[in-house]
Length: 263
Image 1 (cartoon, rainbow, N blue to C red):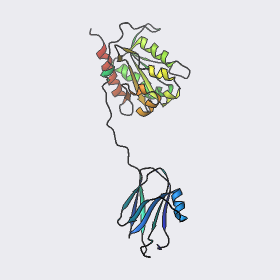
Image 2 (cartoon, rainbow, N blue to C red):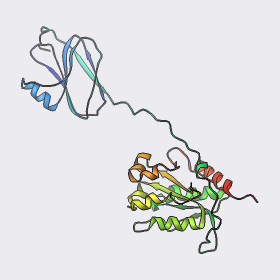
Image 3 (cartoon, rainbow, N blue to C red):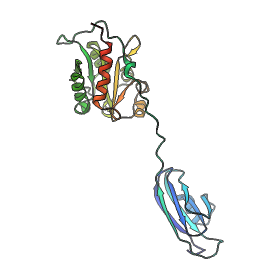
Image 4 (cartoon, rainbow, N blue to C red):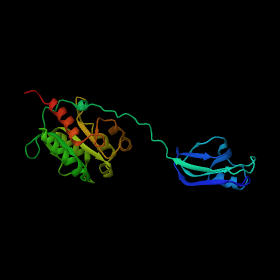
């Protein structure tokens, strides 16, 4: 490499936090610059950069922001000796893992209502399940079957939750006939456009101030739920990302059966 020129490496897109690892065969001047400062550098104008004289390698440069970046190498003021170089890019580190906060479902335990209203067939139920139609096959039906196998009477909201429905009325109706309620929340669920006050009211129905509703999160994160409804993200819930349908059914069955009055 000539002492009057420079060598450059160019990336159209690097993520913030990525690391450029530079290998040099000799000491050189090295500058990491964004597009505007690289243009100023080439034109001989004042510019800002990260780096300086690199005497040892490998040498890491951490990318400060997402965008286009240039790395230049020269030996100006160091003679005309050639220098060999190579670079590799390491992706940004993963976020620090946070331990899952596992809250016992015993927090939803409450005495069932003294009087449940029979439904149109004259029956009452241990649990009802409401869901968006997109989640019927993967979550609602398997959960219905798993709870039934554990001895619970389960009412599956056959009408599902559709655009234009009153979510709050469906929840009220389900709890009127059932001791406990489940609502399957997912991207499809929130895409229905439920009014905010209805979302906040889902788990507001309670007995003696205790939660009777159990939200199940399916293919949705706590952050996404919180963006839709902060009060929902705070409630005791289970997610299909960390629990199987069978595990969720076991926990629900234990809560419901423990709440039943002794014979």
